[in-house]
Image (cartoon, rainbow, N blue to C red; front, side, top):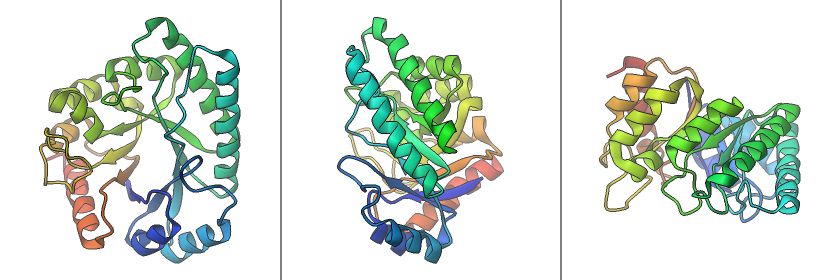
Length: 250
């Protein structure tokens, strides 16, 4: 298991916080870090931190729509970003599982085709695409649907523990991991309160990480601390807590 952290779109935050972590996850594309804008600074920050790179693909675009031309353009854009990510040595790329209308069951095969095409582009670039659950959001696929499509397409999953809790509490975490833990290659970890507070340090909310440990004890993938702070000791405490759970299974 390797533990890193999300750094948004900021190479400055990466430089300030990533030194104690195995990797940094950088948001790229529209409304985020623009590939080519400051690549020398990015490389310098990664070298100084001795951190590997993962990326988060854009939040703004859905993965699929009912319009073929738009779908083709989405794949082309994501492919361009993945090619860049591969060129700077990124290991994984997180993709939100979103559709124009996630409740349109007739369009779910289109989402599966889009996901397969984007994952294949990642393979070509040497970057593992991991699809993230965002079922608590208006355009996000429900967890149960995402699990089935990930199995069908053979796509790795970025399981966001806090997002799953927001969708249906600790039961949602248990159900998804009970059926699809073997698809999970990457984790986003943070704590959540039911009133809507998210991305809290572990231990500050209501997520039962013991449930995660029941299914992922001995996890050998990557874990990104997604806590919205630049307080390094606080980030390190969340890293220690998740390591204690997943290494010890308690």
